[in-house]
Length: 267
Image 1 (cartoon, helix red, strand yellow):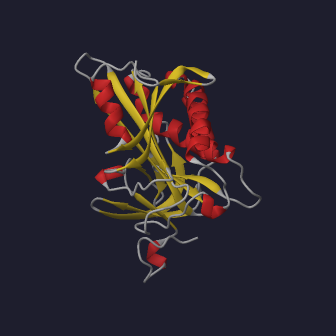
Image 2 (image 1 turned 135 degrees about the horizontal axis):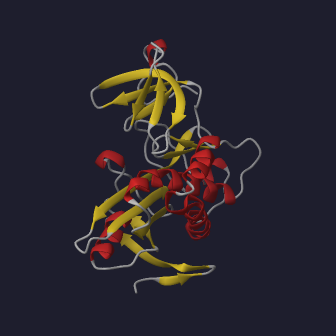
């Protein structure tokens, strides 16, 4: 099988590459070729990294680009909660590198990790039905260690810039262990309540005013939390709760911050 064993994680393998188009795409190709899963793919550089909604993601050397291939990880009804598993695992992996007093490390809905209020990591999960009937799920992340993209929708930062002395190899070891632990806690969906609790306790903005940019407009309200599938629950001004499955979240009420650009989040 492709990849080398990972110390302390007998069920997992690791394929370390120099440069690829995308670690997620590479993992899916291997799934189509029959790989049984439980495979991590890392790369020193991605030449065509991408994020949610097909957005390009800057992927220069020095950061960690990693994707975990899972095959038939659980009942299809529970696969929608795997982004919660990945977010908890990545947050735990970064924390395991050592956080100084006062460092704020939070999960941001739907697929980011914030370090002192700025984005340090993007997450991307993709799934595909394989020709042999199996379900392949790829859980990918790009963690900024030494550099970060130019500001776009959100402010960005890198771990080293915030005083976290990580390297790609050290951070990967923490990530492989934390993802394995989070998957065990999730337990093919049976432990969803426990994973959701971990996500909520480490999330930013719950109970606070937020703005969500949707494909067809903008909504504001109070961030009530998430449901079992990771769908955002927004309490609107008329007292109803709206479920939002996709959008760009900004902290604060944008109506009350006239003149602020959409990418300038209220701190």
